[in-house]
Length: 268
Image 1 (tube, rainbow, N blue to C red):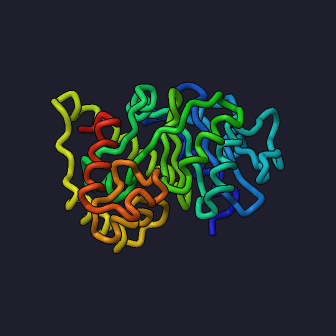
Image 2 (cartoon, rainbow, N blue to C red):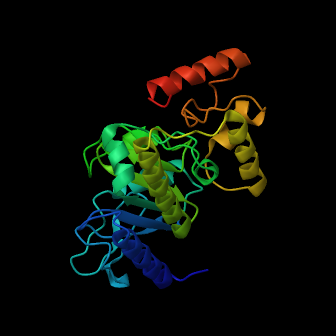
Image 3 (cartoon, rainbow, N blue to C red):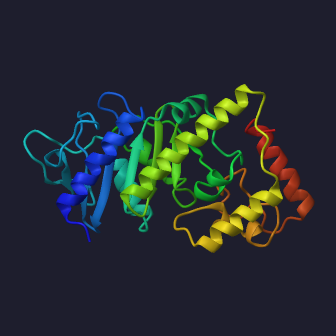
């Protein structure tokens, strides 16, 4: 198991990655890692994520109170959002918040990332909804994000950025990277006349592959009972129905509901 100092170094390395990949500007973004049920490491506020060293990293308890901080460093002002994720998702070991340009553009435009356009995105991410706008550093953002935590491993933040979370730091970062890549491809496909989406049958096969891999996290492949039964999945709603949208419906009605949802999301 990595030492606390090694984890701090890893946080700095991931911070430099998100900075170098233009996922944050200036002092934007924040990263946290769960040490145990009451100790968490996090990046400080007011510091560029591309220039951190281990001594910058703060330690907080489950309520966001400072347990350790060097000099004038203080925990990220968004620590409330991180703590809400850990509270609602005991399986999560790390949280990454950034402002990747393409994904944030979709968040600003109010367009969720639900189109099944490439196998890797369907398997790894499933769908990415948009949490309603909240004022930074307040409880508004954690409250908005909480609605989606039981069903997703990544969320767009309306007019703000993106949030990803997973079992460990590298996995949480990879979800952010995949999210941005997915958003960029979707943006470019739309500029070329619109994406050719995967069929329902193709999505089902990808869901089965994910189940065979036994990947951790929340995903329509595991949460949607219709998908598990071989019926049209709730990929287009990303499981925001809580896995209940197809409970007692016929296939024809399911197809009609899916069509309407996609039309509302402008994903026809």
